[in-house]
Length: 272
Image (tube, rainbow, N blue to C red):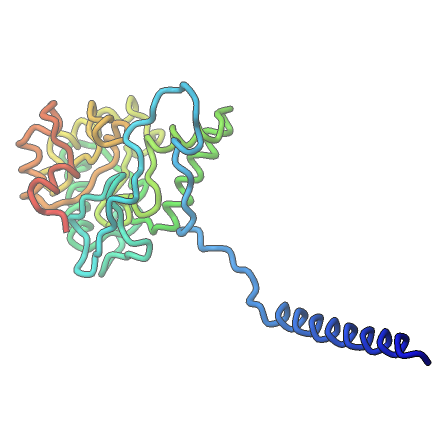
């Protein structure tokens, strides 16, 4: 056998060994690699309307901007000024929540007790039986609600981007909902359509008139959509305590003073 033939055989053998070692290492790395796990629902961040739409459609109301801050909440966040710019930790759960005596859902004890007094007064003094639509909501539950609103608008023929714009006017991103505080209720008159202003006109009028006595205020007043980023929601009330609620009421937040809840909490240095 000639020297060149021997060299070719040796080279072939070496290359074969290198290939075998390489394949073994590759297979081993594939076996030991951790399987992919999708992120939890609450960690999914939806694109903003500005990122999704480059059209001539009207600009949305105040946009979500999660860069401005997330509350620490280590000592509680009962009076946190939660809005489209300031949020809560995704794992935040208020301490000591209890079930409402009437209606459904849970709240922190003080808010639940005052809510029951408010519902009793509406029924016994004004003959209005109230149903609780929603109270405490986790971050993950809020993500589901937000997604449901987007799907609802898409089912009506809107594009995905336009559906997000509309959803942003009436629903919060996870971490930006007051419902996560355990101090907030959505309510309606028993037997009426949810969120129907005409059918619930008496209830909403009574809420505006004296809910503050029990520590509740309307978070998103009429005429302040550009400031709050949400449409008027007379069914959405939040507990901030009788003293604070009465002060905000006396500042004329329902009568065109320009005051609204998150602004008030910050200006009064009440936000946790």
